[in-house]
Length: 271
Length: 300
Image (cartoon, rainbow over all chains, first blue to last red; front, side):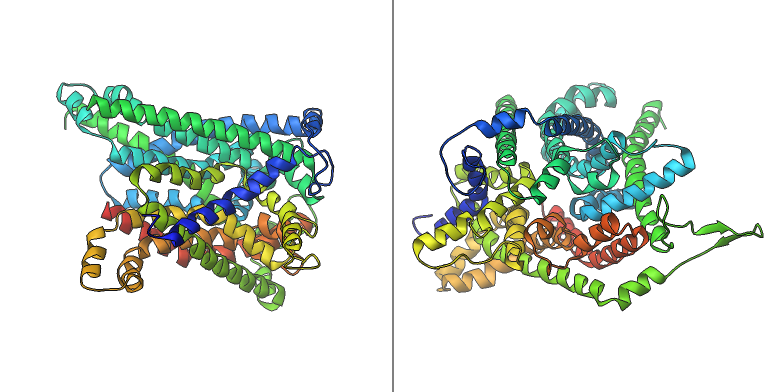
């Protein structure tokens, strides 16, 4: 059909160039010898070396990875439970309310989420003595609150499109509903759980605004370090960091895509 | 009721309880605190606001409500301008995102079926890489000696570098770039379901392609178009990173102003009042978005 419509073909090519051009320019200039990011002065990997000796970036990265992993696990649990309620429970007022409530964090500006959670944490600390100060715990809770909405979207579509006859067969043969869930439903939706976990992980790794509000002294995440360095201007070390992150994300997405594709193929062969 | 049925009912309650508890405590309750603090008076202390319920010397507990923050928002033109600035930026960038995103979504939906999944993956992939870093990439491209100016001077279109970075144009470019996937995905979802036979019938009856698009494709893709537009419009209203990194001093937006009031001026009550105003402004587009989403769920 593209032969018939050069307009659509060029819209796609230009659109993808617009999406990927900036990312490729980051990668190319991370190998630039010169500190001036836009003047090409020869190939070099020295910025990657400097990055490995930047303790501030390394410790922030480690903290971000820990928070992201905890957040992804909590968000996957909460998001899966929400998806089960939204797909499998009877349509009630409560269900519609939960549907709207869980959709809100997807579009809510992060400045509002961050500020409101900070005010809550401060009041809770004064009333209950918990959370004791702000840091890893408060950032994880805040991230899980908006990440669970994304997990819900991913798991929900998988649950809605899965074949329920396997579950019904097991129930007919007398299996307890909990056993059916763990032995049949969970394995079938596991690719969506993996995709949701990875999405929640990257959302947390990426968040600057919410973390800035609810973090405390000594809990500086990677985006906070990147932001303060970017504000001072363009730096080749950040380009090197960006390249590493793009590489990790691409590999993770490829692996996840492959796993989901293979599962899909296997379940189609089973039918 | 059988024992099994009872245990299922308890199980169901247990499943629904945890998400309700979490969202109630960490999403709904915080908004009530925003409203509360927006009515408080600022003070130089930690935390920098006064309690609404205070005990005076005579030992009587008194509720002190301060509408001063909202009054200031109405009186100081800075805040009205920021609201107008946010509305304008959100509307203009949504328009350009549709302008670029619609043809892309249409082309993917009409591509051979084995191409669609890879093409969609390519739309989603940038969303998985860091937002902050993708915005940062534009600094190197848009600045005075950046790639875009170098390219334009090389082609001879301009003689001297033009100022793009730290202007409103840079903010638009950054927002359209970052939010493009949000418009392409819902549009694709409605366009791919579109019944081709309608277009064929129209063509057989002599309807020209442009008229086919305006009379059939566009109205039928309206739910996706509106949902996608709201997915861009709502978050952009509170956007902070893009106007802060790419915009200039005359880029006035609510999200950025809230950040300044909170982190630089340490005026938490005023920041809360701004957040409350932003929330109220966003209710209408949010209801519209939910309506469209429910419609497409029912269509499935």
